[in-house]
Length: 311
Ligand SMILES: NC(=O)c1ccc[n+]([C@@H]2O[C@H](COP(=O)([O-])OP(=O)(O)OC[C@H]3O[C@@H](n4cnc5c(N)ncnc54)[C@H](O)[C@@H]3O)[C@@H](O)[C@H]2O)c1
Image (cartoon, rainbow, N blue to C red; front, side, top):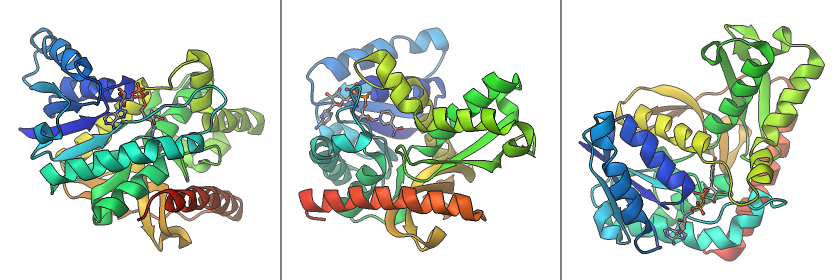
C-alpha cells in the first residue's frame, strides 16, 4: 500500500484525507502541531472506513517520525486568509511553518513527492523546492486544478451543460492575476469564447479570479477546503497510479513560457515520478500579456520570501 502524509490537519488537510480515503489510494498520516486534534480526526475517519468499505489505515500524530517512508507529502499547514486579506499577506506567517514541514518530512521520506497547498501557494512551493534541494519533478503546487474547477462549475451553471463536458484551463499565479484561458477552455471541443457571449464570459472570468475570496467573505473565518482538497486528491491519484494525466499545476519553470526560477501555473503531466513534463500552449498576445503580469506578481512574492529566508 502507498503512503501519503498530510501536514496540517485543519480544514483542508483533514478533508484531503477524507477524499483520499474514499479513493482507497494509500495509507494516510495526518500531522499537526495541535495535540489530540489530528489523532481525534483520524480515529473518527478510520471508524467510517467499515461503513464505506475501504481498507486504509489513518493515523493522526504530532510526530514527524510517523511520516517515514511516505510516497507523497501534502503540505497544508499554516494560516488561511481572513476577509480582506490577499494570499500574499500570509507570507511571513506561513514561511516558517512550511519550511519546517518541508525539512522535517524530508528527513523521514527522502524519496517523497511534495504537493504543496499552503498560501501564498506558488512561493510556498518555491520554498519547499529550494530548502529541500529537490529536483523540480518532486515539488508540485496545487492551484490550477482548483481554479479551473471553479471556472468549470460557473460555466456549467451558466450553460446547463454537464461539468464532464467542460474543460477549463486557468494558468498563471494563484492570485488575483491568475489567467483563465478562454480559447483553450472549451465545451465538448468548442472554445468557450465561441460558445458564450462576451459579457457572460467576462463575468465568469472575473468570478473565477476572485473565487477564493468570494468563499472567504462568506465563511468569515477560514477559506475554501472541499474543492482544494478534491483537487489535491486528483493530483495524488494521477501520481500514484502513474496516469500521465495533464492537469494545471504550479510548477518550477526552467525556460518554459519564457520564465525561469519561478513556480507558476501551467499544464503539467503527472505520473509516478511526479511532474513529468510541462505542456506549452500557444498564447495569443493578450493572453501572453496577462501571463507576464501574473508572473511579475509571483516573482515579487518570491523576492519577498528571499528577504525572510535564506534559500
Ligand atoms: N492552494 C490552494 O488552493 C489552497 C486551498 C485551500 C487552502 N489553502 C491554504 O492552506 C493552508 C491551510 O488552510 P486550512 O483551511 O486547512 O487552514 P486551517 O486553519 O483549517 O488548518 C491549518 C492547520 O495547520 C496547522 N499548523 C499550523 N502550524 C503548523 C506546523 N508548524 N506544523 C503542522 N501543522 C501546523 C494548524 O494547527 C491547523 O490545524 C492555508 O495557508 C490556506 O490558505 C490553499
